[in-house]
Image 1 (cartoon, rainbow, N blue to C red):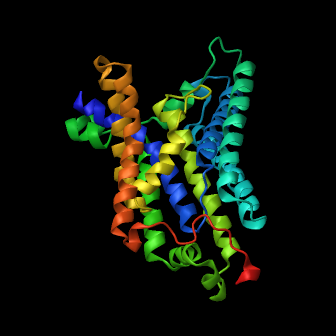
Image 2: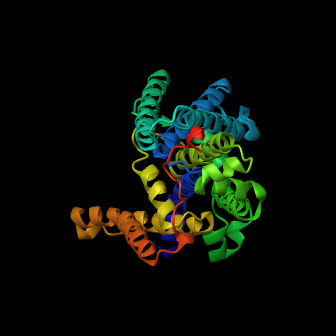
Length: 329
């Protein structure tokens, strides 16, 4: 039961890791993208759309499906859908200088509404008897595990029994951490988030860095939605099933102190807290609902402690949420 609990916690935490990593990258450029929940939703339904198109073209027969295309097509659809959402946010906030908080919330509403609309449309097209879409063939390719994991006993179950998107999430988080802290691109990006006027005066293209950071961050976040559907939900799409995971990903950014490396551990911790709800059935509905609050309470506690310590490395970028007007430089 302990092994099962740990594995489920990892699977629950991986979408949060994707979302928080993408949001950290965006916030390092000085933009607060509260549209991450909607972007993750669009990333999920876009991948589902690509997968459904490919499965139908193969006659819904797994024997006719190419494993590479079965994985690549949903990935491309998910990334394209997520990037388009990120570009909409960038155009409104970077180019038109719209309020970042309002724009992000509007993007979340748009993403969830668009996802539910497309989901309902696809369910109608497939003539499903249930209000869901089952993509078990594609999910089997996404959920393929390392062939030697079952030969390693407990170690294999705990470390090597996950889908490739789980390991990909960790790799991406490590790469983002290295880029932010060890490269000139990361230094320029952080300078844009801290003081865009100074960065602009130094010859750094603030608009370009914010556009790219938001687009790449959105693509990463969108993969979290796809991973949830294909790996955790076994290829089953149901409207509104994603829940509040997008908001938890944003909370995880604060919990991880804007550090992708800490987000890896934080995502698994949040996943464990969410999974604990399934192991306390005998304590009543009220207690279960209280357990769902723990990730947010933990985030608030971390925010209070870091604010009291007043260490600069534990604070968000100085220009986070503030639009940059070049003419005021």
